[in-house]
Image 1 (cartoon, rainbow, N blue to C red):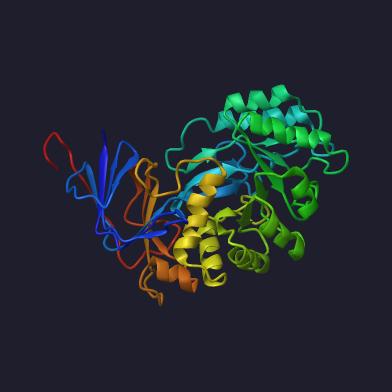
Image 2: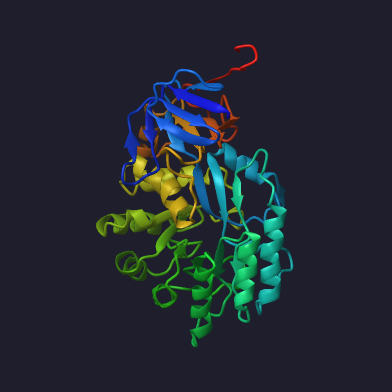
Amino acid sequence: MPSLLIHNIGAIATGDLAQPLRDEQTLFIEDGLIKEVGTTRQKADTVVDAQGLTLTPGLIDGHVHPVFGEFTPTQNSIGWQRFYMHGGTTTMVSAGELHVPGLPLDPPDPKTFKYLAVLSLRCNSKPQQYGPKMQTGTLLLAPGLKEEDFAEVAAEGSKAVKFIFYPLMDPWDEALQYVEWAHKYGLVVKLHSGGVSRSGSSRPAGSEVTFRLQPDIVAHISGGPIPMPKDEMESIVAESKAFMEICTSGNYLRTVELIEMATRHNALDRVVMGTDTPGGTGIQPRGMLRNICLISSLGKIAPEQAIAIATGNTGKAHNLQQGIIAPGRPADLILMGAIRGSVASNALDSIRVGDLPGISTVIVDGQVVIKDRSEQTPPPSSLAKTTHFHSCCGE
């Protein structure tokens, strides 16, 4: 089984909000999984000297809009997912493959949406060699869907459904039936909240819709790009059980206010993160890092808590195993540090003061996929060193 040893770690941000920071300096990985945190082992197939850098889980972008493979007609770009990997994102979760040119939205067609989800799943069925893990095939909900449609997309591998173009008004019976069917087949229910999207065809949704439908995730609650009213946002923080998503495409003031509300109401464990890209906001390889810096520096939460929101919290909301550094979890990891010239001394200090950290190394399933340095951030002041050993000849 392939093994990897990381030593000389400066700090470990675990991704677990309950224990967000550990001071062990070593980590042992075998067969793609974390085996030991604070190991005494000294040998492995691959050894990474972290050079005092901070180790974090790979970032989980909980809100992307892929279409087919690595092509997005929204920005007429191909290969964009690889750039996100260099920005520290090792997992992407689709919020719907809705940017297909000519996609009929008014009225929304249930058959088109169902087969679009299936097509996206099949176009993303093979792991990207140089890109993040992809969770695609989110079913966009439309009147006229049947229970067998939910069963079919779940069998194909879909993990989520989304209310965005569905007419959110009385009677609510069909919409509530969709929530029931989604949960029956293990699908996460996501709600487009706030004002209309770039398409102009989405349906505005605030606290009233949220409390009626009780979705699992309130998408871009602080704007994507337009948020719901502040008082409605706070009622969801205080009174609902839903995960609340913040996105790069949103309203920055409302995002900071959401973090303040979640802190007051002891609800940081329900805050999750995404970019809501590609879209009108463009392609943002450093979007998740920017989110982390924003909520820590202006929202006044610890950097390790901001990292947990971008990793463990978001993974939990989407039923993923990755996102937390602990034995048995997938070894999707980042080594990062302060960029030369920053006032900060390490990655956590950088995030605290709002400076972008620099990424040296990205690891996915225990394999070093980016070494030396990221192409999307300036280099940190020190770079990790990777050495590969071979059992046939010792080195």
